[in-house]
Length: 393
Image (cartoon, rainbow, N blue to C red; front, side, top):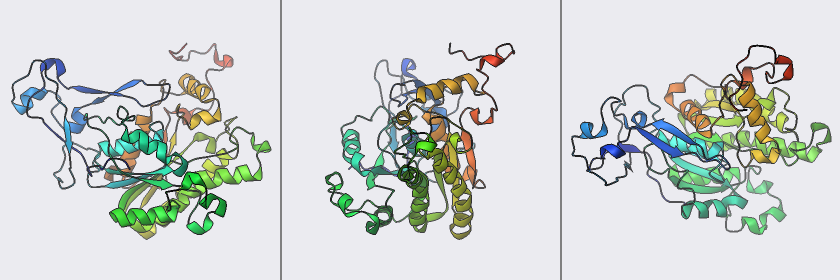
C-alpha cells in the first residue's frame, strides 16, 4: 500500500531561514507529463498566505544562512480551522476518493494533486490489473517528482483501493474473471465492495471524482463499431459514474461534491474519436444533469462534469492522433497555449470547494475556450483575414 498520509496540509516555517539566493517567491514544480515535462509556476504566497511584498526572512525575523538548503514541511491541518485570508480554496478536513488513477500522467492524478494542495485527504481507486505497478512505483519513489505540491511537500495518498468500475457487485462478475490471476490477492474490487471498504476504513467522504473511460474500439468509426464495443464504452465511461454515485452517496457528507470528466466530442463531431466514445460522453453529460437533481434533492450533493481539452496522457494516446488534437487547439482556441493537467485539477478543486456551493448540473469547459469556436481558423480559407496566428510554426 501507499504511504500513510496526513489528512490535510498547512505550511509551517522551518527554524532557520532561507538565504537570499534561495528565497522562495515562486515554486517551480516539474509538470507530470509523458513526453511533456514542461515547468509551470505557482505563486508560493497563494498557499503559504504570506505577504506578497515581504521577503520570507523578514516575515519570520530570522537570520539568513549562506548556503544551507531547507525544506518547507507539511503538517496535519485537520484541526486547524482558523479562517484564511482572502478567498482561498480551502478543503482542509475534507476527504476525496478519486476513481481511475493508475499512473502519474493524466487528469485524475492532476485533480488529486490540486485537492491535496487545498488540504484534502486523498484516497484512490486503481484499475485492478494496474494496481501492483502503481503501488510499486509509488512506494519506490518513481512518482516523487510529480507528487510535488506548490508548498514543496509531496502529495500523500492515504490508501489505494483496487477498483474495476464495470462491475457493480460480486454477483455481476463472471466466474472466469473471478479466477483471473491478475485479480488474485484483491478479493474486494467491485464498486459496491470498494464503497463498503471505504466506509469501514474512514466512515465518510466529501468529494467523489470519476476519472474513468474506456472504449475497446475507440479507433473504429461509429459505423464499424460492434454492439459489444459500443456498450462496453457506455458501461466503462458513463454508467460507471452512475454506479459510483449510487454506492458512494450513502457515505458522502451533505454538501459534498462529485466531478467527472467529459470531452467536446459529446456535442460536436470529432472524426477518429469512435467506438461509441462520443455517445458515452454525451450520456455522461446528460446523466450529470439528472444526477444533479436526484443527488441534490436526496443528499444535498452537487454533481458537475469538466469538459477538458486534449492532453498528451497515456490514455489519450489510444486514440492515435492526440498530437494533432493538441496542435489544432493551439491554432484555433482563443487562448493559444497548451492546456496543462494542472489547470483541470485546479478547476476541479474549485468545483469541490464551498466557493462553488451553488454550481451543480453543469458542464464546465476547461479547454482554452476551444468549445466556443464555430470554425477552424487555421483553414487556408481564412488565410486572407487578419486573424492572430499561433506562435507555434
